[in-house]
Image 1: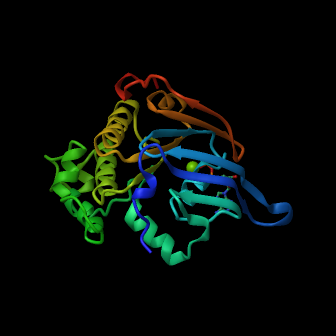
Image 2: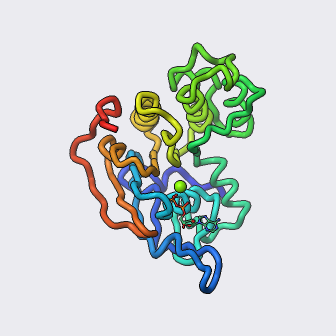
Image 3: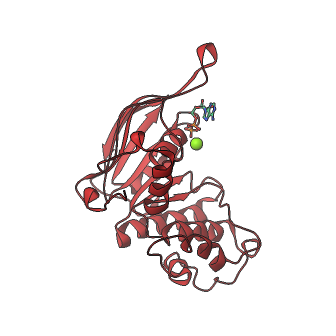
Length: 244
Ligand code: ADP
Ligand code: MG
């Protein structure tokens, strides 16, 4: 059963987790990556989840993105319970609703920018044209370039175009600026802010770069597998003014 978009209108939660845990391994070797996470991410917001390396950020992102499962507790996308879905339902959820952006762009080196985007739009229900998606990220002059002919920041923008071309409900970004210098990183953050503002896509960035929090609606401080503090920003700093 496809998940309806109606259950996640603005003002409602895009994501919620309840007492979510994730333990890798068993006994003395067990690693408690998540220790009972109660998370709420309102639909339409730009959210930054901040925490040191090894604190469980990627684990949490992967579970709400349907790439992995928690050990105990629940995870919801709107009113749909991810933790109760079959593998097939999770695959369909990812395909229909989730765009992923990772630190390393994972572009196919033998395909042009447009072809890399097209690879994903071929299996989407109501995709944008690759040219439209690339134009949204400021790359309409680079459609026929191969990844090797693009800078790191441009490659990441192709990866963002690929993620947004299927018009996902949520965009989940794991250290999206982790491999970029500060100027290029700001450009990538600008593109993510534009996607949030222009398409209404809920955006979650997980990062250890604390300065990124200034551009968010909501900053979730995370450490040792748990939420420590949630700060709702009354004003947002444009990415161009973020001090790295
Ligand atoms: P972060 O993204 O904040 O750096 P992670 O979610 O990647 O943190 O990792 C949280 C903890 O879980 C770390 O101690 C890490 O070593 C451990 N971990 C992550 N993935 C696995 C795995 N597949 N198997 C075992 N331990 C893992
Ligand atoms: Mg990580």
